[in-house]
Image (cartoon, rainbow, N blue to C red):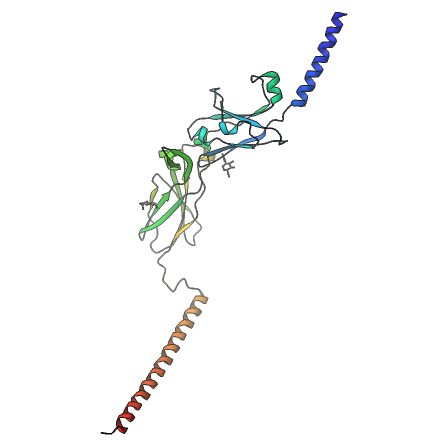
Length: 290
Ligand SMILES: *[C@@H]1O[C@H](CO)[C@@H](O)[C@H](O)[C@H]1NC(C)=O
Ligand SMILES: *[C@@H]1O[C@H](CO)[C@@H](O)[C@H](O)[C@H]1NC(C)=O
């Protein structure tokens, strides 16, 4: 009899336990993914119900040294900026998004395996996207130009100085230059080491257009190239007349005719007045008593 009682009790307890855990089950974070631009790295996820909070942990891959992110503990946001934590080091990181539940914590303590979702492995140094570069274009001679490339700033500071992508990628950073002659469809590509890049062998007097992008050959193919810059063109020394449209010609002729008419009218008026004044002076002189 005692035995049956115990069994019943165990059964009841188990039902109660499964009911409570059922009630308190917290939905896991979903669609966990990284976005990273110029080494600003953000972990994002989605949630089914917004009343829960989540805590983000991260570790270097295979080190199993899970650390909290101060500003992403019990957060009700669905993203966490890990720029400061991961810096831009060439390391593989993992992150874990743990669903918070007071109830589970009270009942099972912090060692409990909370509902959680691992983020895919991420290496900011190798996988962060690089935004478009800016550059200036200077003619050296008829066949040569220099592109002076400037680097985008990152949100990482070191010693109070905001770092550029060059400060982080150092000698791994190269530049891809794409250029073409105006009116031709063939594009030429060139990869250079220096941010002050010379492009020579251009046809004299022709106009050319240039674009640049960051290029990091040491990275996996998919993330080697940054965004293309805007296009910049050098004007060829085409003759003044060649490029003018019909409208421009009509305008120029109209202005010329107007100028000529004004000039002629002004000259005529001026002459007449002078003539008249001259006459007046003469008559005044002749009528004056001697
Ligand atoms: C980098 O940019 C590509 C194309 O826009 C995008 O698909 C990818 O998710 C981005 N990667 C990161 C880590 O932000
Ligand atoms: C390139 O541009 C930067 C910033 O605009 C300037 O400080 C630098 O002197 C330029 N370098 C050359 C080689 O023109």
